[in-house]
Length: 441
Image (cartoon, rainbow, N blue to C red; front, side):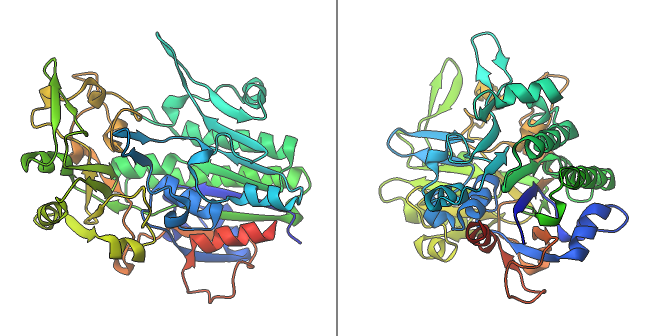
């Protein structure tokens, strides 16, 4: 009987990465139980996918329509908001609390988990002071992060995002997970191994150090298995390893906002020779996130925007209300139109024609002020000592739903074959995984 479930989110991991020689620990799990291609949700981006699994529902229900949200009333864009209250569906820990089962839940480094009903929470929450940034983590119960510091040291945010990203982020999170397992023994634990994500975005899907990175991932999984064995719960534990999305190689970006500006749809205000977005007077604006863009359109400009999108080389799909319903993304927070790029393209947020007039935050790691996801923050220009403004540097992306030919499906691996009655060769929906976990505990 399953008494403990450990869910390990290995970002960017695919079925083709599993092998006896390179990933022996994951391979053994796959041979013991089952391995499936995982049918993800649209858009295939972190916040959306994680909340679909945690709630067992689609974004049309839970409302996390991308890694960013646009507030139409206040004309503001916010990316990577951490509040649990943004999620409009019950997640697994809410269901557990309602049923009073007494199962303990823990979640490490998943999105939208601050202030949640999970019993143990750990998530990065840097404190921005006047003269510096304190690299802190929010934790529940209060003081839990400080206990972790005594055992494994502080978590360095530069390992987690920016040009200095490192395997150290995954290693620290794994050590923290061991600490939680040993000291809290949760019935259900969610943890995160992020470093493949950075490498795929920077280098594409077949970079030279991929085998080493996969071995490192597998070693971390092996450590968690050993810890579970050491504390005496291995026989009662189900391991679930999954990834949120797979990657496709890309060769260039598309700057939708600059195109809208060329067509007098997007407005800017120039302040001290710098151009800032003016969402109040913009007729159309694209909140971009990897290979998808939520486009917010004012008044009667929908047909004009659609016609422009149809003429852009590299735009693969244009979702109207009917297609949004089919893709399970028809939510009030969604764009009036959603654009999807070709598999070899991605959408950048840029709106300026002259880089000299770009805001200062464009050349910095600044995930909260940019009105779109910016993978170029993974790069550094030693000449200017800043983040470059060159979308061609990015080599891998995700967000679109992969076709069968693209072979970029994420994967589900478990040591126990009990999640559904479907055939082995059928894809498994990430929403089904979430519903299974809700029912299990």
